[in-house]
Amino acid sequence: MLCPEVWRFQAPVHEILEKIGTIDRKKPKKNVIVNGIRSHHFNQMITIILPDVTSIPPTLETILADSDHYLVRNISLQSLVARPFIEGFIKRGKFYAVSFRTRLDTEDCVVVTPGGTLVLHLNKETYQTLGLEGRVSQFARKRNSKYVVQIDLKTLQPETKHYERIRKCLSRETLGRFDLQITWTPPEACNSTDSSATICPSSVASYFAEALAGELEPTAVKVELMPTVVKVHQEYGLKVPEFSLIEQPGKEYCSAGELIEYMGMLALSCDTEEEEYLNSYDFSGDRVEIGNAKVMHWKGFFTTAHVESVYRALLGALERESHVPWLGMYVHGFSDSPISFGMRENYFHTDGDNSFAVVVNPKEEYLWYQLVGNNKLPK
Image 1 (tube, helix red, strand yellow):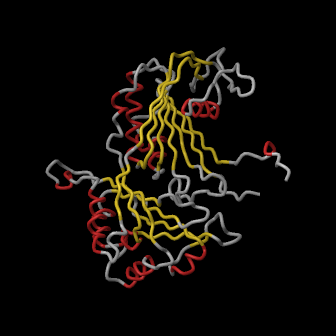
Image 2 (cartoon, rainbow, N blue to C red):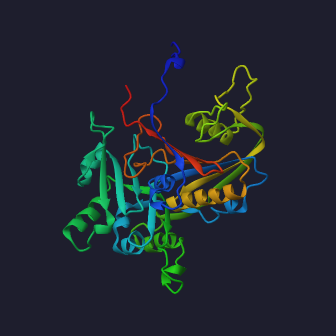
């Protein structure tokens, strides 16, 4: 068998959204970065890159200390429409769930958005036996092999025919049971005397562990703590690209794509030296020689509030480290999540990539770099 000429294969095409500007603190509702972060609900990894700093600021080092999530194994989806669960966790606070280690292109996948929408991404066989109304996936229109069903949990009214029908359909054996990664953000207390101020995020784990104990198979449902994995490393002797929105005479700046690519190489500890003949890397534009760069990774399940808190801490660090050329943050979503930004259906024919990066310099000039699948079938 002849080996294929892999060097002729075209790289997967993505939709790239670049936005540049200056942070306007007087108009928080028009903040491009914050609005972008809040539209991406399911985040698997956060990486920050801090060039030319002596140490990672304590605020950044501990910002995600309480970001552990839970894994609920072998749960029936009818548990998500139970009245106590909807009243206690869907209508109060923000509940996130995503199916664990399921493949979007070949298996049934599930998410629950913080807005209270249950999204099912189902194979044709499962959908046809389920009995719920949905639509064909935009990536499977020719073969009708995948279907999407959305259920607004907040509007379900118990003791109605519609509610009973949904509950019955979600309990069908053809749908089976799922392993769900979950996390819950309690409702914000209006004042210190509010009883909700004492609610712990782990209450959702206690609910599933206790409320499901009365099922026919109580030993089948298990709740596990999933700690956030943290990794820190340092790169030495670097010449990083400059980032500025104002062009200066005699200076040349690299493109946005080159800057994000360089950040990725630092995050992966790649060798950026130009002397290597077989495996070299170069970018256009001027460079700034620095001593080192600190890189910190968090891997787990992060809500929009977690990512936003990292971004706010990054801005705080930038005010204290005004000598740095820039600071960067990279956030990667779940490749097999049914949705990516907003309620947009996730692309799965190539890599399911849905991620974004943020770069900010001491002048509070920013770069927002968003990467998603191109929503087109491969030829």
